[in-house]
Image 1 (cartoon, one colour):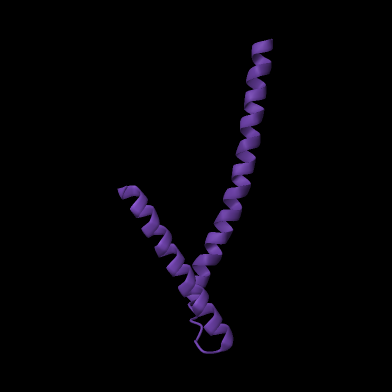
Image 2 (tube, helix red, strand yellow):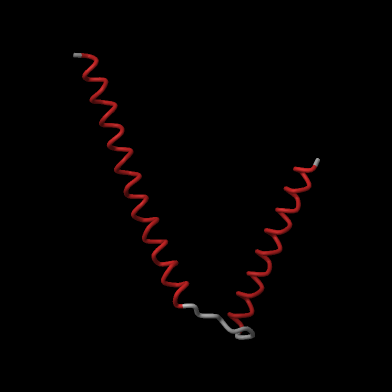
Length: 79
């Protein structure tokens, strides 16, 4: 029961945060609230996006490498 209560609380918290963000975005688009600009945050966000791209490429290359290594091992056993 305790875990169920935590899950409900977590869902409620996430929903409230999402609602708050949506409200803020709508107010910003209507010009009722000021958009905050944080150049440092934007820079870090850009770096994070770049890291994710590079990590995705690395993951793809590693999958190929592992596939080839397994194929070599299987071929070696067959000899």
